[in-house]
Length: 282
Image (cartoon, rainbow, N blue to C red; front, side):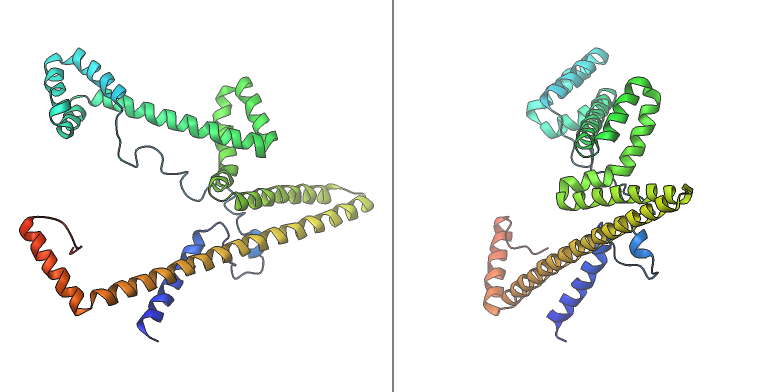
């Protein structure tokens, strides 16, 4: 096996490992795994809900800077005046000094940003819930008016149950639709099982068992569809990896050419003497 094929094989194995993180997990060894996968942890998010605020560089708006400066002026007018002079002369140092001497005001801005982000996130989730699971949205709305203290707890439970599906609806609407349908089928399955175990009417029990068989069949189709989606994703990822391997191989082959090496060497030497950046040597 040549090097390029070995690289493709390694990358393919990496992609197969990566697919475990996909919502459509692979079969387990036990025969019941097909029916239980995804149920032990529920449909809630497997990872965090997103990057959220604070994970990227925190940039203050001019309005926020003005607010911080006003607070600093009240506490330390001289320091505020000194820092204000840096705003145009040295913006980088201005930001450093502002953070150092206005921690209280800066912290307040950060908290406001986080609270705003959380409120917007909650509003988007509730909007999605109202469209896709209206009965849950209505229940939450009534509870918010009737018992605000219990509303927060109930909201967290609903978010845990539907959060993953909501997140997928923003990335992969088709998968979200499949997951939501699967959740409804699981709920109907549990309802039927409860009735089957409690009913004493023979005819009613047979009718319920027949409906249960239909629900199980529908779940089978849903699970197969999820596996099909995982398979399609894997094929797409493998093709991307093959393209990357081909591009990398072509780049290396070109760089190994003696003429290309000589040209880049002369160019780099000239750039070093002129203190310019060019070919990526590091």
